[in-house]
Structures are given as structure tokens and as C-alpha cells.
Amino acid sequence: DIQMTQSPSSLSASVGDRVSFTCRASQDISHFLAWYQQKPGKVPKLLIYAASTLQSGVPSRFSGSGSGTDFTLTISSLQPEDVATYYCQNYNSVPYTFGQGTKLEIK
Amino acid sequence: DVQVLESGGGLVQPGGSLRLSCAASGFTFSNYMLTWVRQAPGKGLEWVSTISASGGAIYYADSVKGRFTISRDNSKSALYLQMRSLRAGDTAVYYCVKDRGSGSSYGMDVWGQGTTVTVSS
Image (cartoon, rainbow over all chains, first blue to last red):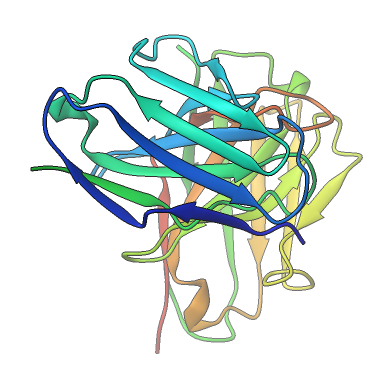
């Protein structure tokens, strides 16, 4: 099975900062990676699919990059409403494993 | 509006059974792969099971294989998860999730509000 490892597990940054999270797959998953945002007490939301394609309606400050085993989610200018836990997910092959999440907070 | 809505959660004793349902609307149900994802209290997301648009391909996480059965009724735009031999570790919010793809996954774009399953004596 493919394991997904996210780092860091938590991150604190200031409004306006550029922040990045990483996700590493234990095997090559090409570009079959999605990023989800889950705000506190809310349902997960698809942000990015195919490693770098922004889902409709997602602010352009979010971007994704990478392929193979190493992926990055970047927020170009952190906003207060971005406080959430972010999960990556492999959908190259079953099991469609999620990473353990990165919790983002505002300083 | 594209949406999915789960029902059927509740409190069940260890070893018991429960059937979750998911009603979909706002899209052509028979064209899309569907998945159950769960989230234990205070924990991350866990993929549980996926069924292709036609129902011809079904996949399970090892943690539920042999105990859970996913199915769909395209004539009713409904997804189901029959859960048997439930354990305390199955306690979670269960989400019904629509995929962007039909036979293969392309990312999960519509999530329900979730239904809570609690396994406890």
C-alpha cells in the first residue's frame, strides 16, 4: 500500500505570510494527488486535484506542485479564514490513502 | 445544487450491524464513482470504500474488508454502506463523497455533512 506522509504536522504563521506544506508518497503516484482543506468543525473541501489543478471556486492564493513522490501545497498570502487542517490524498491506486494532516494556525 | 446527504448513523453495540444511506441530487448519479470516508473523533481522514459508477468495481480498506459492504442503486441515486461485526474502532463520522471520475478516481469534489456511528456497550 502507498503511504502518504505530511510535514510539518502543525504550522503557525502570520497573516500575509507565504506558507507551504509538503506531502510525500511512499511510491510514485505520478500526478494523482489531491489536497483537501478541513476547517474546524466543518466538512472537508477539495482544493486541488491532479497535484496542481485548482478546484473551481478556490482562491488563487492556493497552489499545488510536484509529481512522483514529492508534493507541495502553497498559500501565497495567508488569510485568517485559512485556519484549517490540510490533507493530501493519493488517488493513483487503492487504497486511496490520506496523509495524517497539517494543522495550520495563525500567530 | 449538487449535494449528497447521509443518514443511518447511531449508537450500536460491539458486534452489531448498521446500514448507512446516502441520497444524492443535482448531478447524474450513475456517471460518478462514490466513496465512504470516515473520521474518528479528533483524528484524520480514513478512506473506507469506493464503488465505481456502474457498480462493477468495488474496493475496501483492509480495516473493513469482510465486514462492510458498499452498494449503490443508480435508479434511486442512492449509495449504501452495510456495516457488520462493528468494533469500537469503527466509531467515527462517516462521509459520503462524490468523485470527479467514473471508473477511476480523479479527486473527491462533493462531501456530505456526515453521519455519526458510535460503537459502544
